[in-house]
Image (cartoon, rainbow over all chains, first blue to last red; front, side, top):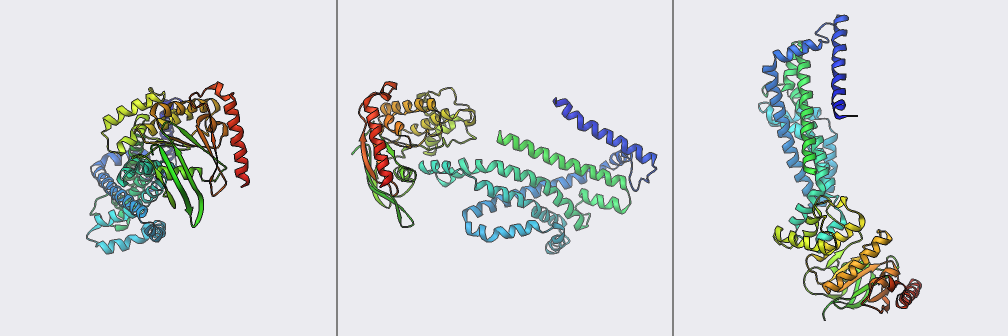
Length: 250
Length: 243
């Protein structure tokens, strides 16, 4: 299939679905508060752009900060675990416990700990808790994937620890790590949105809060507009990470 | 004594001796082959000579600097260009990148691959990758060349070409070469002397000199010297397997 068709096919399918949605809502006279037509969502998006777009910027910024911290903490812990296998054995299972615990369940605790007056910090911590695990797991796997034959080669030439890390271990771990970061990017956005919901405060001004706000006012079209922007953010983040992965691994 | 000297080397793991005592001497420009059953410690001995493994007893005498070594796999960095792969030993030793690359290109030319410098390892055939590994082993002008069954996975024609290359290299570089192989023919074709090892713990049970050091070509394969040395090596191998 040609590239143009590959791009056009999903666009045409999306357009068709929106058309069917619009027609069905009108024909069946569905109340807009239950399911607004796409045209109303478009109007809401245009009308509330002044509020929604900056809110999307806030959510995106928080997600990027969370991703940055997740990379720092995840890679740092993976390096520490590699250096100290006993620590890895001791703490590894607890990392799994943290990963397996739903963020919603720990959110109230984190909010109490950092104080309700610091919702920004609480959201960031919760998003990092969600996003750090794939980075840690992938960096840990990547750092253990070094080819033993190449390790012997570096030992033969008496490479220093730094030379080996920089020229062998890191390039070996890079594909693992980038794949983990790609997953973490999506999760950091999920983490920020869930944390904004749970924090239940508008002081950070993120998109999830706008969603809650619109829900409370029964402005369903605005909710869909915010959802649309959230989906766009997710897509954008994924595309950015995929581009970075291609660029670094080429 | 110049060349490569192994004196009464033994290796043990968990209190069990797995190799030795082994003693041998390879003069500069000469090739010695290590032939023996699987698990007899041939590669272990090579690791000791390379400095990758400490012997339980005995010592290795070799001029300073790490020896060049070609492993069973080409062990190339998949993300680096061929030129960077060959330059690696020099850069690890602290040489300036530009100078290292110049020397790497010379080494690549000496193994007949001057045109692949900018390619990645995955773009080369198995035989070409082994040539690159050989260039990398030679680039730092090592005191000896160690070959650990490097051509086992290469097809017959490619293997013959690589054998001829090794033969040429040890003469031009005047290097002592220690070569581990499972193939009797390969050992006899390349070596001036074939050391046959017993089963674990591997000890040298026969030293088979191969006459006709100067010439290695197709006619050598049909010579009485080649056939006779192969016969003697096989007989020693059978005896070693029974010991």
